[in-house]
Every structure is written in C-alpha cells, then in structure tokens.
Length: 72
Image 1 (cartoon, rainbow, N blue to C red):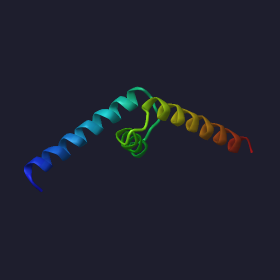
Image 2 (cartoon, one colour; image 1 turned 180 degrees about the horizontal axis):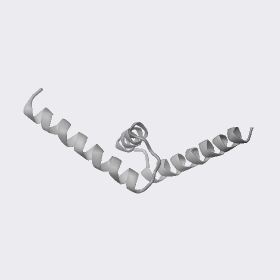
Image 3 (spheres, rainbow, N blue to C red; image 1 turned 30 degrees about the vertical axis):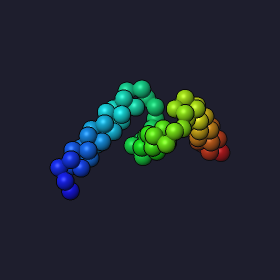
C-alpha cells in the first residue's frame, strides 16, 4: 500500500474512533457496525436528521419488543 493510502486509512480509522467516542458520550446506543452504517448512509446523501429519527424509532420498537418478551 502506498504511503498516501496508508495515511488515508489511518486518518479514516482515527476519524471513526472519534465518532465512536462522541456516539458513546451522547449515549446513542449505536455499536460500531450501526454507526458505520449510519456514516455511510450520510455520505450517500441521506438526511442525517431523518436518519436519526428512524434510528430512535427503531430503538424504541426494539425496547418495546424486549419488554414484551420479558413479560411473557
């Protein structure tokens, strides 16, 4: 791999680590894979506010499902 490619990969990893730390500080509940998917969607042009709303709604539905399963 060329030095410029190595630099880009290193920068991308550092950027993602910073995003993961910010995500954890904000208690988003996103794991690295989910955060990576969200980043790629934003890079592809998805509106970040709409994406955040969808993620929150999905998290609510999962929490509701988990509560229902625990009650059974």
